[in-house]
Image (cartoon, rainbow, N blue to C red; front, side, top):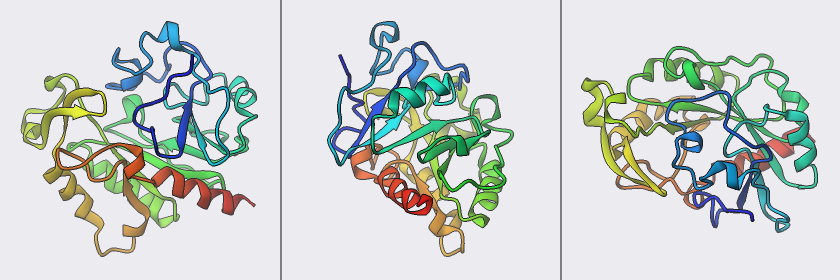
Length: 242
Protein backbone atom coordinates (compact mmCIF):
# COMPACT_ATOMS: atom_id res chain seq x y z
CA UNK A 1 0.00 0.00 0.00
CA UNK A 2 1.30 3.46 -0.95
CA UNK A 3 2.68 5.57 1.89
CA UNK A 4 2.64 9.35 1.61
CA UNK A 5 5.75 11.31 2.53
CA UNK A 6 4.75 13.42 5.57
CA UNK A 7 7.11 16.20 4.45
CA UNK A 8 5.28 16.76 1.14
CA UNK A 9 1.74 16.28 2.46
CA UNK A 10 -0.59 19.07 1.37
CA UNK A 11 1.99 20.67 -0.93
CA UNK A 12 0.71 19.57 -4.34
CA UNK A 13 3.63 17.13 -4.58
CA UNK A 14 3.43 13.36 -4.15
CA UNK A 15 6.46 11.10 -4.08
CA UNK A 16 7.44 7.89 -5.84
CA UNK A 17 10.29 5.41 -5.43
CA UNK A 18 10.13 2.74 -8.16
CA UNK A 19 13.16 0.75 -6.96
CA UNK A 20 13.78 -1.57 -4.03
CA UNK A 21 16.76 -1.50 -1.69
CA UNK A 22 19.05 1.28 -0.56
CA UNK A 23 20.76 3.98 -2.60
CA UNK A 24 24.32 3.14 -3.75
CA UNK A 25 25.46 6.74 -3.24
CA UNK A 26 25.34 6.18 0.55
CA UNK A 27 25.28 9.84 1.55
CA UNK A 28 26.06 10.22 5.23
CA UNK A 29 23.03 11.11 7.38
CA UNK A 30 20.55 10.45 4.58
CA UNK A 31 17.14 9.94 6.19
CA UNK A 32 16.15 7.36 3.57
CA UNK A 33 18.63 4.72 4.62
CA UNK A 34 19.36 5.71 8.19
CA UNK A 35 16.65 3.46 9.60
CA UNK A 36 14.42 6.49 10.29
CA UNK A 37 12.56 6.81 6.98
CA UNK A 38 8.77 6.97 6.86
CA UNK A 39 9.08 3.84 4.69
CA UNK A 40 10.74 1.63 7.29
CA UNK A 41 11.12 -1.27 7.06
CA UNK A 42 12.29 -0.63 3.50
CA UNK A 43 12.08 -4.27 2.51
CA UNK A 44 8.32 -4.21 3.22
CA UNK A 45 7.43 -0.82 1.73
CA UNK A 46 9.43 -0.51 -1.48
CA UNK A 47 8.72 0.16 -4.25
CA UNK A 48 6.44 3.02 -3.17
CA UNK A 49 4.57 4.41 -6.18
CA UNK A 50 1.05 5.91 -6.10
CA UNK A 51 -1.58 4.11 -8.15
CA UNK A 52 -2.99 7.42 -9.37
CA UNK A 53 -2.54 11.14 -8.78
CA UNK A 54 -4.83 14.12 -9.10
CA UNK A 55 -4.47 16.23 -12.24
CA UNK A 56 -2.78 19.09 -10.42
CA UNK A 57 -0.29 16.99 -8.45
CA UNK A 58 3.40 16.84 -9.37
CA UNK A 59 5.20 13.55 -8.78
CA UNK A 60 8.60 13.84 -7.17
CA UNK A 61 10.43 10.77 -8.39
CA UNK A 62 12.93 9.39 -5.88
CA UNK A 63 12.50 11.20 -2.61
CA UNK A 64 14.66 8.25 -1.61
CA UNK A 65 17.20 6.32 -3.68
CA UNK A 66 18.28 7.94 -6.99
CA UNK A 67 16.57 8.23 -10.37
CA UNK A 68 19.78 7.17 -12.11
CA UNK A 69 19.67 3.76 -10.38
CA UNK A 70 17.93 1.46 -12.90
CA UNK A 71 17.07 4.60 -14.83
CA UNK A 72 15.35 2.81 -17.70
CA UNK A 73 13.04 1.06 -15.27
CA UNK A 74 12.40 4.30 -13.39
CA UNK A 75 11.42 6.12 -16.60
CA UNK A 76 9.09 3.34 -17.73
CA UNK A 77 7.44 3.04 -14.31
CA UNK A 78 6.74 6.78 -14.06
CA UNK A 79 5.84 7.43 -17.70
CA UNK A 80 2.12 7.44 -16.91
CA UNK A 81 2.41 10.49 -14.65
CA UNK A 82 1.82 13.68 -16.69
CA UNK A 83 3.54 16.01 -14.19
CA UNK A 84 6.79 14.78 -12.70
CA UNK A 85 10.41 15.58 -11.98
CA UNK A 86 13.37 13.38 -11.16
CA UNK A 87 15.97 13.55 -8.39
CA UNK A 88 19.53 12.38 -8.95
CA UNK A 89 23.08 12.93 -7.77
CA UNK A 90 24.65 11.68 -11.03
CA UNK A 91 25.63 14.57 -13.29
CA UNK A 92 25.78 12.68 -16.59
CA UNK A 93 23.16 12.49 -19.37
CA UNK A 94 20.68 14.74 -17.57
CA UNK A 95 19.04 15.56 -20.89
CA UNK A 96 17.98 11.90 -21.24
CA UNK A 97 15.21 12.57 -18.71
CA UNK A 98 12.15 13.71 -20.62
CA UNK A 99 11.01 15.81 -17.65
CA UNK A 100 12.64 18.31 -15.30
CA UNK A 101 15.45 17.00 -13.11
CA UNK A 102 16.93 18.13 -9.78
CA UNK A 103 20.63 17.45 -9.33
CA UNK A 104 22.31 17.14 -5.92
CA UNK A 105 25.73 18.56 -6.70
CA UNK A 106 27.72 17.54 -3.60
CA UNK A 107 26.51 14.04 -2.68
CA UNK A 108 28.19 11.42 -0.52
CA UNK A 109 31.93 11.83 -0.10
CA UNK A 110 31.86 15.07 -2.14
CA UNK A 111 29.80 16.92 0.47
CA UNK A 112 32.60 18.96 2.01
CA UNK A 113 35.25 18.91 -0.72
CA UNK A 114 33.81 19.30 -4.23
CA UNK A 115 30.66 19.69 -6.35
CA UNK A 116 29.45 18.68 -9.81
CA UNK A 117 29.95 21.41 -12.41
CA UNK A 118 27.44 20.77 -15.18
CA UNK A 119 28.45 22.17 -18.57
CA UNK A 120 26.56 22.82 -20.76
CA UNK A 121 23.41 23.43 -18.73
CA UNK A 122 20.54 21.30 -20.10
CA UNK A 123 17.12 22.92 -20.50
CA UNK A 124 15.53 20.40 -18.15
CA UNK A 125 17.79 21.17 -15.17
CA UNK A 126 15.15 22.37 -12.70
CA UNK A 127 17.62 23.44 -10.02
CA UNK A 128 20.73 22.19 -8.28
CA UNK A 129 20.65 21.14 -4.65
CA UNK A 130 23.59 21.82 -2.32
CA UNK A 131 23.98 19.95 0.97
CA UNK A 132 24.95 22.69 3.45
CA UNK A 133 26.66 22.53 6.81
CA UNK A 134 28.51 25.24 8.69
CA UNK A 135 31.95 23.92 7.74
CA UNK A 136 31.49 23.68 3.96
CA UNK A 137 30.42 27.28 3.38
CA UNK A 138 33.57 27.96 1.35
CA UNK A 139 32.43 25.27 -1.07
CA UNK A 140 28.88 26.62 -1.09
CA UNK A 141 30.18 30.03 -2.17
CA UNK A 142 32.06 28.43 -5.06
CA UNK A 143 28.94 26.50 -6.11
CA UNK A 144 26.76 29.62 -5.97
CA UNK A 145 29.32 31.53 -8.01
CA UNK A 146 29.36 28.77 -10.65
CA UNK A 147 25.61 28.20 -11.01
CA UNK A 148 24.21 31.68 -10.39
CA UNK A 149 26.45 33.01 -13.18
CA UNK A 150 24.74 30.45 -15.42
CA UNK A 151 21.27 31.45 -14.16
CA UNK A 152 20.58 28.09 -12.52
CA UNK A 153 18.59 28.17 -9.25
CA UNK A 154 20.43 26.80 -6.21
CA UNK A 155 18.42 25.30 -3.34
CA UNK A 156 20.31 25.02 -0.06
CA UNK A 157 19.48 21.90 1.94
CA UNK A 158 20.79 22.26 5.49
CA UNK A 159 22.14 19.00 6.82
CA UNK A 160 20.99 17.49 10.12
CA UNK A 161 22.92 14.94 12.13
CA UNK A 162 21.79 12.03 14.29
CA UNK A 163 25.16 11.79 16.00
CA UNK A 164 26.40 14.89 17.80
CA UNK A 165 29.99 13.77 17.16
CA UNK A 166 29.45 14.24 13.41
CA UNK A 167 29.61 17.98 14.08
CA UNK A 168 33.09 19.50 14.58
CA UNK A 169 33.46 20.95 18.06
CA UNK A 170 33.83 24.55 16.92
CA UNK A 171 30.47 24.40 15.08
CA UNK A 172 28.32 22.69 17.73
CA UNK A 173 26.84 26.03 18.76
CA UNK A 174 25.24 26.35 15.32
CA UNK A 175 23.09 23.25 15.90
CA UNK A 176 20.27 22.35 18.27
CA UNK A 177 18.63 19.00 19.01
CA UNK A 178 15.05 19.27 17.77
CA UNK A 179 12.28 17.55 15.85
CA UNK A 180 12.35 17.96 12.07
CA UNK A 181 9.27 16.45 10.37
CA UNK A 182 9.18 12.99 12.05
CA UNK A 183 12.66 12.61 13.56
CA UNK A 184 14.74 14.48 16.12
CA UNK A 185 18.39 15.26 15.57
CA UNK A 186 20.99 18.01 15.65
CA UNK A 187 19.86 20.56 13.08
CA UNK A 188 20.78 24.13 12.15
CA UNK A 189 19.55 26.95 14.41
CA UNK A 190 17.45 29.72 12.93
CA UNK A 191 20.16 32.27 13.80
CA UNK A 192 22.80 30.31 11.86
CA UNK A 193 20.39 29.75 8.96
CA UNK A 194 19.76 33.50 8.76
CA UNK A 195 23.49 34.20 8.79
CA UNK A 196 24.07 31.96 5.76
CA UNK A 197 20.98 33.27 3.98
CA UNK A 198 22.27 36.85 4.25
CA UNK A 199 25.51 36.12 2.36
CA UNK A 200 24.04 37.12 -1.00
CA UNK A 201 21.47 39.74 0.04
CA UNK A 202 21.62 42.70 -2.30
CA UNK A 203 23.90 40.95 -4.79
CA UNK A 204 23.19 39.94 -8.38
CA UNK A 205 23.10 36.29 -7.26
CA UNK A 206 20.37 36.73 -4.64
CA UNK A 207 17.46 35.91 -6.97
CA UNK A 208 18.90 32.48 -7.81
CA UNK A 209 19.33 31.24 -4.22
CA UNK A 210 16.65 29.55 -2.09
CA UNK A 211 16.61 27.35 0.98
CA UNK A 212 14.68 24.12 1.36
CA UNK A 213 11.78 24.88 3.68
CA UNK A 214 10.27 28.11 4.97
CA UNK A 215 12.82 29.44 7.48
CA UNK A 216 15.07 26.73 8.88
CA UNK A 217 15.71 26.11 12.53
CA UNK A 218 13.58 26.15 15.63
CA UNK A 219 11.60 29.19 14.40
CA UNK A 220 10.66 27.69 11.04
CA UNK A 221 9.51 24.57 9.24
CA UNK A 222 10.85 22.26 6.55
CA UNK A 223 7.40 21.12 5.38
CA UNK A 224 7.00 21.48 1.61
CA UNK A 225 3.58 23.15 1.79
CA UNK A 226 5.23 26.26 3.29
CA UNK A 227 8.10 26.31 0.80
CA UNK A 228 7.01 26.04 -2.84
CA UNK A 229 10.45 25.87 -4.46
CA UNK A 230 9.78 22.62 -6.33
CA UNK A 231 6.33 23.62 -7.57
CA UNK A 232 7.56 27.00 -8.81
CA UNK A 233 10.72 25.74 -10.49
CA UNK A 234 8.91 22.75 -12.01
CA UNK A 235 6.57 25.04 -13.96
CA UNK A 236 9.37 27.45 -14.89
CA UNK A 237 11.39 24.53 -16.27
CA UNK A 238 8.44 23.13 -18.23
CA UNK A 239 7.99 26.54 -19.87
CA UNK A 240 11.67 26.57 -20.81
CA UNK A 241 11.51 23.06 -22.28
CA UNK A 242 8.71 23.89 -24.75
